[in-house]
Amino acid sequence: MALFAAIAGLTSLLQWFLFQNRLKMWWVGGNLIAGMVLGWTQNLLYSTYEWWGYESLRILLVLWVIGNLILGTNLVQKAQRKSGAFSPASPSISDTQLMATNINQNIFFISLSVALLLFFLLVFSTVLSLTSAKDFFTILLGVADVWVGISFFLKKEIPRNFGFMTFAFSVFLFGIFIELEYFELEYFISNFTLALYTIPALLSLLSGIFFVTQQETSRDLRFILLSGFLISLSIVQLTRDITAIYNIFSILAALFALSAAIFFFRGR
Image (tube, rainbow, N blue to C red):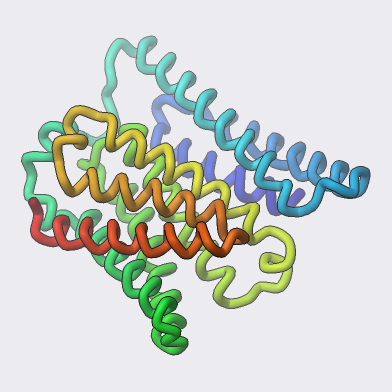
Protein backbone atom coordinates (compact mmCIF):
# COMPACT_ATOMS: atom_id res chain seq x y z
CA MET A 1 0.00 0.00 0.00
CA ALA A 2 2.81 2.41 0.91
CA LEU A 3 4.65 1.67 -2.36
CA PHE A 4 1.51 2.33 -4.41
CA ALA A 5 0.89 5.59 -2.58
CA ALA A 6 4.53 6.68 -3.06
CA ILE A 7 4.42 6.05 -6.81
CA ALA A 8 1.07 7.77 -7.24
CA GLY A 9 2.13 10.68 -5.05
CA LEU A 10 5.45 11.24 -6.83
CA THR A 11 3.86 11.08 -10.28
CA SER A 12 1.03 13.46 -9.36
CA LEU A 13 3.50 15.84 -7.66
CA LEU A 14 5.50 16.06 -10.88
CA GLN A 15 2.28 16.72 -12.80
CA TRP A 16 1.27 19.43 -10.35
CA PHE A 17 4.75 21.03 -10.60
CA LEU A 18 4.45 21.04 -14.38
CA PHE A 19 0.88 22.42 -14.46
CA GLN A 20 0.75 24.52 -11.30
CA ASN A 21 -1.63 27.03 -12.90
CA ARG A 22 -3.96 24.29 -14.17
CA LEU A 23 -3.84 21.51 -11.55
CA LYS A 24 -4.73 22.16 -7.91
CA MET A 25 -2.85 20.71 -4.95
CA TRP A 26 -5.76 18.37 -4.25
CA TRP A 27 -4.63 16.41 -7.32
CA VAL A 28 -1.62 15.15 -5.35
CA GLY A 29 -3.76 14.20 -2.34
CA GLY A 30 -6.31 12.49 -4.54
CA ASN A 31 -3.64 10.36 -6.21
CA LEU A 32 -2.15 9.44 -2.83
CA ILE A 33 -5.56 8.17 -1.73
CA ALA A 34 -5.99 6.34 -5.05
CA GLY A 35 -2.58 4.73 -4.53
CA MET A 36 -3.53 3.50 -1.07
CA VAL A 37 -6.83 2.12 -2.39
CA LEU A 38 -5.05 0.26 -5.18
CA GLY A 39 -2.48 -1.09 -2.72
CA TRP A 40 -5.28 -2.29 -0.43
CA THR A 41 -7.05 -3.86 -3.43
CA GLN A 42 -3.87 -5.68 -4.45
CA ASN A 43 -3.39 -7.09 -0.94
CA LEU A 44 -7.03 -8.15 -0.76
CA LEU A 45 -7.02 -9.91 -4.12
CA TYR A 46 -3.66 -11.55 -3.42
CA SER A 47 -4.83 -12.98 -0.09
CA THR A 48 -8.26 -14.01 -1.43
CA TYR A 49 -7.57 -15.55 -4.84
CA GLU A 50 -4.75 -17.99 -5.59
CA TRP A 51 -4.63 -16.96 -9.26
CA TRP A 52 -4.01 -13.31 -8.37
CA GLY A 53 -0.26 -12.96 -7.84
CA TYR A 54 2.16 -10.07 -7.60
CA GLU A 55 2.53 -10.02 -11.38
CA SER A 56 -1.19 -9.23 -11.63
CA LEU A 57 -0.28 -5.91 -10.05
CA ARG A 58 0.44 -4.60 -13.54
CA ILE A 59 -3.30 -4.70 -14.29
CA LEU A 60 -4.05 -2.27 -11.46
CA LEU A 61 -1.11 -0.08 -12.45
CA VAL A 62 -2.31 0.15 -16.06
CA LEU A 63 -5.80 1.10 -14.89
CA TRP A 64 -4.39 3.79 -12.62
CA VAL A 65 -2.10 5.23 -15.33
CA ILE A 66 -4.94 5.36 -17.86
CA GLY A 67 -7.30 6.97 -15.35
CA ASN A 68 -4.63 9.44 -14.26
CA LEU A 69 -3.87 10.52 -17.82
CA ILE A 70 -7.51 10.81 -18.86
CA LEU A 71 -8.63 12.74 -15.77
CA GLY A 72 -5.49 14.87 -15.63
CA THR A 73 -5.73 15.82 -19.30
CA ASN A 74 -9.42 16.67 -18.88
CA LEU A 75 -8.68 18.93 -15.88
CA VAL A 76 -5.87 20.71 -17.74
CA GLN A 77 -8.08 21.29 -20.78
CA LYS A 78 -10.90 22.67 -18.62
CA ALA A 79 -8.48 25.04 -16.91
CA GLN A 80 -7.18 26.22 -20.28
CA ARG A 81 -10.71 26.88 -21.59
CA LYS A 82 -11.56 28.74 -18.41
CA SER A 83 -8.48 30.96 -18.67
CA GLY A 84 -9.14 31.48 -22.37
CA ALA A 85 -5.66 30.62 -23.52
CA PHE A 86 -2.64 28.52 -22.83
CA SER A 87 -0.30 30.75 -20.88
CA PRO A 88 2.46 28.84 -19.09
CA ALA A 89 4.43 30.49 -16.33
CA SER A 90 7.54 30.31 -18.52
CA PRO A 91 7.59 30.84 -22.29
CA SER A 92 7.56 27.64 -24.33
CA ILE A 93 8.23 27.28 -28.03
CA SER A 94 5.87 25.45 -30.33
CA ASP A 95 6.58 22.10 -31.95
CA THR A 96 7.17 23.83 -35.28
CA GLN A 97 9.71 26.18 -33.74
CA LEU A 98 11.34 23.25 -31.94
CA MET A 99 11.98 21.51 -35.25
CA ALA A 100 13.72 24.63 -36.50
CA THR A 101 16.02 25.02 -33.49
CA ASN A 102 19.52 23.62 -33.21
CA ILE A 103 18.58 20.62 -31.09
CA ASN A 104 22.16 19.50 -30.53
CA GLN A 105 22.73 22.64 -28.42
CA ASN A 106 19.89 21.81 -26.02
CA ILE A 107 20.93 20.04 -22.81
CA PHE A 108 17.75 17.93 -22.84
CA PHE A 109 18.48 16.48 -26.27
CA ILE A 110 22.18 16.08 -25.52
CA SER A 111 21.24 14.09 -22.41
CA LEU A 112 18.71 12.10 -24.42
CA SER A 113 21.35 11.23 -27.03
CA VAL A 114 23.74 10.02 -24.33
CA ALA A 115 21.00 7.89 -22.70
CA LEU A 116 20.09 6.34 -26.05
CA LEU A 117 23.73 5.49 -26.74
CA LEU A 118 24.10 3.94 -23.29
CA PHE A 119 21.02 1.80 -23.88
CA PHE A 120 22.57 0.50 -27.10
CA LEU A 121 25.85 -0.28 -25.33
CA LEU A 122 24.02 -2.02 -22.48
CA VAL A 123 22.04 -4.29 -24.79
CA PHE A 124 25.02 -5.33 -26.87
CA SER A 125 27.30 -5.84 -23.89
CA THR A 126 24.53 -8.16 -22.62
CA VAL A 127 24.32 -9.97 -25.97
CA LEU A 128 28.10 -10.42 -26.01
CA SER A 129 28.08 -11.58 -22.34
CA LEU A 130 30.44 -8.83 -21.26
CA THR A 131 29.49 -8.90 -17.59
CA SER A 132 31.70 -6.06 -16.36
CA ALA A 133 30.66 -3.79 -19.22
CA LYS A 134 27.00 -4.68 -18.67
CA ASP A 135 27.19 -3.68 -14.99
CA PHE A 136 28.95 -0.43 -15.87
CA PHE A 137 26.45 0.57 -18.56
CA THR A 138 23.48 -0.42 -16.39
CA ILE A 139 24.48 2.03 -13.67
CA LEU A 140 25.24 4.79 -16.17
CA LEU A 141 21.97 4.24 -18.05
CA GLY A 142 19.91 4.50 -14.87
CA VAL A 143 21.59 7.77 -13.92
CA ALA A 144 21.33 9.13 -17.48
CA ASP A 145 17.62 8.30 -17.74
CA VAL A 146 16.85 10.01 -14.43
CA TRP A 147 18.77 13.07 -15.59
CA VAL A 148 16.89 13.16 -18.91
CA GLY A 149 13.62 13.25 -16.99
CA ILE A 150 14.90 16.01 -14.69
CA SER A 151 16.36 18.07 -17.57
CA PHE A 152 12.94 18.11 -19.25
CA PHE A 153 11.47 19.97 -16.28
CA LEU A 154 14.48 22.30 -16.14
CA LYS A 155 14.31 23.28 -19.80
CA LYS A 156 11.10 25.27 -20.01
CA GLU A 157 11.41 25.85 -23.76
CA ILE A 158 10.68 22.18 -24.52
CA PRO A 159 6.99 21.91 -25.56
CA ARG A 160 4.76 20.75 -22.69
CA ASN A 161 2.70 18.49 -24.91
CA PHE A 162 1.45 14.97 -24.28
CA GLY A 163 4.35 13.28 -26.09
CA PHE A 164 7.17 15.02 -24.24
CA MET A 165 5.43 14.76 -20.87
CA THR A 166 4.79 11.02 -21.12
CA PHE A 167 8.34 10.55 -22.39
CA ALA A 168 9.84 12.49 -19.47
CA PHE A 169 7.85 10.52 -16.89
CA SER A 170 8.63 7.18 -18.55
CA VAL A 171 12.39 7.72 -18.82
CA PHE A 172 12.59 9.07 -15.26
CA LEU A 173 10.79 6.05 -13.80
CA PHE A 174 12.72 3.63 -16.02
CA GLY A 175 15.99 5.03 -14.70
CA ILE A 176 14.89 4.66 -11.09
CA PHE A 177 13.69 1.08 -11.62
CA ILE A 178 16.93 0.14 -13.39
CA GLU A 179 18.96 1.26 -10.39
CA LEU A 180 16.63 -0.45 -7.92
CA GLU A 181 16.88 -3.70 -9.84
CA TYR A 182 20.64 -3.50 -10.29
CA PHE A 183 21.35 -2.96 -6.62
CA GLU A 184 19.09 -5.94 -5.87
CA LEU A 185 16.69 -4.54 -3.35
CA GLU A 186 15.20 -7.88 -2.31
CA TYR A 187 11.65 -6.64 -1.77
CA PHE A 188 11.59 -4.92 -5.15
CA ILE A 189 13.10 -7.86 -7.03
CA SER A 190 10.94 -10.58 -5.48
CA ASN A 191 7.59 -8.82 -5.65
CA PHE A 192 7.27 -5.90 -8.00
CA THR A 193 9.93 -5.91 -10.75
CA LEU A 194 7.70 -6.83 -13.71
CA ALA A 195 4.62 -5.07 -12.38
CA LEU A 196 6.32 -1.72 -11.85
CA TYR A 197 7.88 -1.72 -15.32
CA THR A 198 4.33 -1.60 -16.66
CA ILE A 199 4.11 2.11 -15.82
CA PRO A 200 7.09 3.35 -17.88
CA ALA A 201 6.20 0.79 -20.57
CA LEU A 202 2.73 2.25 -21.05
CA LEU A 203 4.06 5.81 -20.94
CA SER A 204 6.77 4.95 -23.51
CA LEU A 205 4.17 3.43 -25.81
CA LEU A 206 1.89 6.48 -25.57
CA SER A 207 4.80 8.84 -26.17
CA GLY A 208 6.03 6.90 -29.20
CA ILE A 209 2.57 6.80 -30.73
CA PHE A 210 2.14 10.53 -30.14
CA PHE A 211 5.40 11.50 -31.86
CA VAL A 212 4.82 9.28 -34.88
CA THR A 213 1.27 10.55 -35.41
CA GLN A 214 1.89 14.30 -35.07
CA GLN A 215 2.43 16.34 -38.22
CA GLU A 216 5.67 18.05 -37.20
CA THR A 217 7.46 15.16 -35.48
CA SER A 218 6.32 12.57 -38.05
CA ARG A 219 8.30 14.51 -40.67
CA ASP A 220 11.48 14.49 -38.60
CA LEU A 221 13.63 11.37 -38.88
CA ARG A 222 14.97 11.88 -35.35
CA PHE A 223 11.52 11.58 -33.84
CA ILE A 224 10.53 8.70 -36.10
CA LEU A 225 13.56 6.78 -34.82
CA LEU A 226 12.82 7.87 -31.25
CA SER A 227 9.25 6.62 -31.66
CA GLY A 228 10.53 3.27 -32.90
CA PHE A 229 12.76 3.06 -29.83
CA LEU A 230 9.96 3.99 -27.41
CA ILE A 231 7.47 1.52 -28.87
CA SER A 232 10.07 -1.28 -28.94
CA LEU A 233 11.16 -0.41 -25.40
CA SER A 234 7.58 -0.62 -24.15
CA ILE A 235 7.38 -4.19 -25.49
CA VAL A 236 10.72 -5.02 -23.85
CA GLN A 237 9.48 -3.74 -20.50
CA LEU A 238 6.22 -5.68 -20.73
CA THR A 239 7.82 -8.99 -21.80
CA ARG A 240 10.68 -9.27 -19.34
CA ASP A 241 9.37 -12.71 -18.40
CA ILE A 242 9.03 -13.88 -22.05
CA THR A 243 12.62 -14.47 -23.11
CA ALA A 244 12.22 -14.81 -26.89
CA ILE A 245 10.16 -11.64 -27.36
CA TYR A 246 12.27 -9.76 -24.82
CA ASN A 247 15.53 -10.58 -26.63
CA ILE A 248 14.23 -9.71 -30.10
CA PHE A 249 12.77 -6.36 -29.13
CA SER A 250 15.78 -5.50 -26.94
CA ILE A 251 17.99 -5.70 -30.02
CA LEU A 252 15.43 -3.82 -32.13
CA ALA A 253 15.15 -1.08 -29.48
CA ALA A 254 18.96 -0.88 -29.29
CA LEU A 255 19.23 -0.34 -33.05
CA PHE A 256 16.57 2.38 -32.96
CA ALA A 257 18.37 3.94 -29.96
CA LEU A 258 21.73 4.04 -31.74
CA SER A 259 20.21 5.52 -34.91
CA ALA A 260 18.24 8.14 -32.96
CA ALA A 261 21.29 9.06 -30.88
CA ILE A 262 23.39 9.63 -34.00
CA PHE A 263 20.79 11.89 -35.62
CA PHE A 264 20.14 13.84 -32.41
CA PHE A 265 23.90 14.35 -31.96
CA ARG A 266 24.10 15.63 -35.53
CA GLY A 267 21.11 17.89 -34.84
CA ARG A 268 19.25 16.95 -38.04
